[in-house]
Image 1 (cartoon, helix red, strand yellow):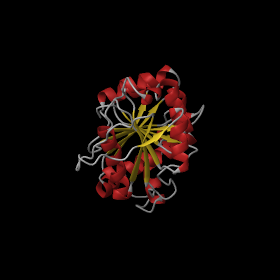
Image 2 (spheres, rainbow, N blue to C red):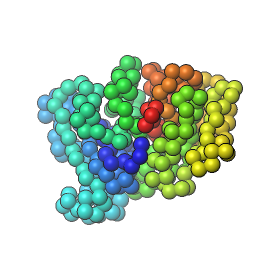
Image 3 (cartoon, rainbow, N blue to C red):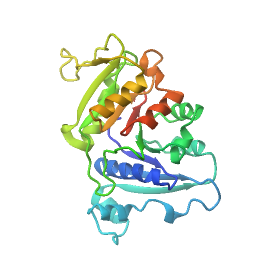
Length: 276
């Protein structure tokens, strides 16, 4: 992830998606980019425009503009281009994948909540299919956990970034992507904590000082349990992790285990595909 030029936020108009929408909009303001709000209708007539999140009202609630100002003022004032897209009834995963095949995204922002909202799209093999079809970094926002964007005021609290690392793929690229994201939103106050589940930590070189590797702490136990425990105890504002590789403990973070991480995480999770 270099500069964020385009964000896609799928929504089902549920309460779970409202928290993710606040994150997507706040990130778009920081990046001054295009935000596509995407709804995949489940039946004819279920994609009414009035149901889409109200961007101007949200910005007015955050004290950034008046709710009566025309939509063009959003682009003029903030450099953000808002696109609302209602797709025909179909399987949500298919609709998202087809949209992204035509419109490249630098970031996808998804809501997660057990048995509700977008989370129901991420069960079993669907999660793996999404990972294969959508090569962009994805931010998963739990509806009932602490987010790093306050939906009432639009303020950002992103100080602690927890990053589990492994030997494969090499973690430096993913760490750079995750921390650029955090610094764009929170400035240089964002702090990273790296850890590895196993006996020997990977060597993580600093970009500016390769002779001084970054400190990586060691943990033992089930990878998912360790991540959730570390995120709760610190506490983390964001969990960032690579989601590819065929060796090492991060391989466990796929399929049904990915669902466990996302659903148990006490904060948003930024998943970065290898090579992004």
